Length: 259
Ligand code: HXC
Image 1: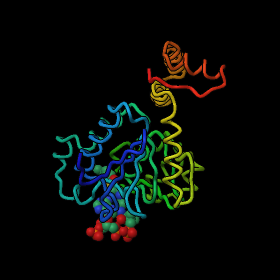
Image 2: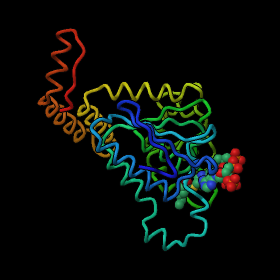
Image 3: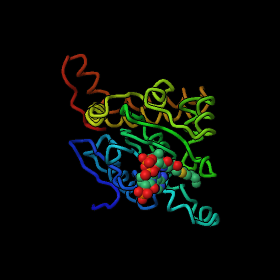
């Protein structure tokens, strides 16, 4: 499939998706959403692919936000009637396999929100995160007010949303927004290593682990614990559970079946 705004490469069982509008700092427009939705759906449906990495082209930006030029003259009724931004949610909800955001520079507004849609974020030392929508007379529209608050807590989320300031990678790591910070030139190696480690796990267990951590944001502790126990119990019926435990006892590498 040929894309105009992203590139998609497969490296073994890892799909690498690169936002590719460097002239606009990889700003996210409707065409990017369409292509990204297609690419992630294809990744999710492909049994040979186990983990994806999403990053930005160029040295400067992961994505500097939703495309302001696309939104500038759009009437409010169109935003409402098109349910503008709803597609991002649909895309995220439909992707059951794990995907990592490798943030290589600015991740602002929709760019920060896209990074937060991923299962976790690995950041280069050059990464800058922020929700500067307030400076444009609006507010986050792709989940920023909700996911950022869950990730870093009210104090810092309010600070970022109300002042529109950026935080650097070190602050983002301290705040719990990103899982790792690495030197800029090591970003893709580190992200690929993490993705390959995930791709080497039994795939159903990877999907279940993702589903369970996500459930923690949606439910009560007792419901979440029940969900966890039930999925644990279901996994015990898989061939990969039998193989994983047998391989441990026999002190050998497991040979996953994916079921
Ligand atoms: C469209 C963008 C863009 C964006 C940058 N560009 N961000 N185009 N949408 N979000 C374009 C610029 O217009 C410029 O194009 C080129 O990319 C390079 O950007 P510069 O501003 O010249 O670069 P620099 O001076 O280095 O500044 C980098 C920056 C700045 C600090 C990241 O670009 C910036 O503040 N961008 C906007 C960040 C932002 O507000 N994001 C939130 C968007 S709203 P030309 O053609 O001039 O060379 C959002 C959610 C909206 O995401 C929800 C509400 C409905």
